[in-house]
Length: 388
Ligand SMILES: Cc1cc2nc3c(=O)[nH]c(=O)nc-3n(C[C@H](O)[C@H](O)[C@H](O)COP(=O)(O)OP(=O)(O)OC[C@H]3O[C@@H](n4cnc5c(N)ncnc54)[C@H](O)[C@@H]3O)c2cc1C
Image 1 (tube, rainbow, N blue to C red):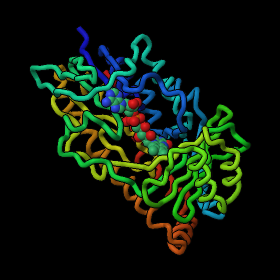
Image 2 (cartoon, protein in one colour; image 1 turned 60 degrees about the vertical axis):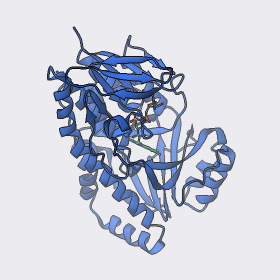
Image 3 (cartoon, rainbow, N blue to C red; image 1 turned 30 degrees about the vertical axis):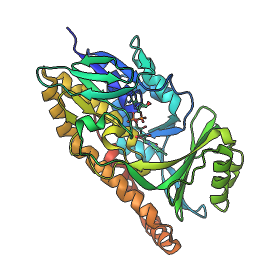
């Protein structure tokens, strides 16, 4: 008889775990707080490690089919001068595959399609979980008082995870990363190259999504709480903040409509959690390691979690032993990535100072592309375990 898993959260991590567990023969049920799948959202870039993880979960080709083959393209300074250029060929030669950029709802749909007949229960809010043990199943309690038991519970309920406390009651709460960010997806006004600009006190990314649309993000160091919640006012403050940045940044912001933009303050866990599993419950994705977005690995790590989790619990007859293996493999890796993301966020924070920015840019310009490739490979060269 197949073993049962409840996945809480239909985000990137939860849906990857669900796909991977299904492939390993588990009976899977997904619970999602939102009343329906999200049809709006920003873009995302998935690096080589994530794509290999999605391949293992059986959905890599489906994701590539709806994404844009992406690569770092050009890293520019605030005046628009190229600091670093790495070609797709160089990345493919080093990592075996280039990255893919896509609209988040398309990624979500590809992951949902991978589930086949398994439907997600929308509007199901998990409020607690009893982790169970070797002898007892885990039990999830929903907001309406209903309880559901399973051999395994994957808590992939995001940065504000409610279930985290059942696994790591002493975990620190997420803290403000030090930056606010604006995100938008719009019809591409003619941007052909993926680029990142590192200017004083901020960063802008322009990422063609391959479906005729453009994803841009703009991050600015400063205090939390500047988003007004009124899209027109938030967009006006972005236009103001980046008005003197190089072309085509002001033009792209000018043709963005208020309903296409969202502004959010960035939060992450200040340090690695003391544990990722308890009894029959595993934390995955941002619930386990929400991090600043600076190394582009948050979602990628959630994908890795899902695949390693499925492999670990499927190789042994004991879920509890399998989860111990999951934690043994994932905790050091995600802790490294989380620390690197914070280090990168702090450098960004210090670079509100123009002299420091100039110094950083001079150093970057002098670096051979090989050093940039080494930096990218640090996390992206991961390969998934084989699923049994
Ligand atoms: C500006 C920005 C840019 C980023 N860019 C990238 C990038 O390019 N590449 C990358 O890899 N990562 C990126 N990230 C990080 C990435 O977005 C996250 O790491 C990733 O989305 C986390 O996925 P998740 O499934 O863990 O959590 P989420 O996507 O937050 O999903 C959690 C799900 O759980 C549901 N849920 C929550 N609570 C409950 C509950 N109690 N009961 C039931 N359901 C619940 C939520 O509704 C949600 O659907 C970026 C992040 C930001 C902020």
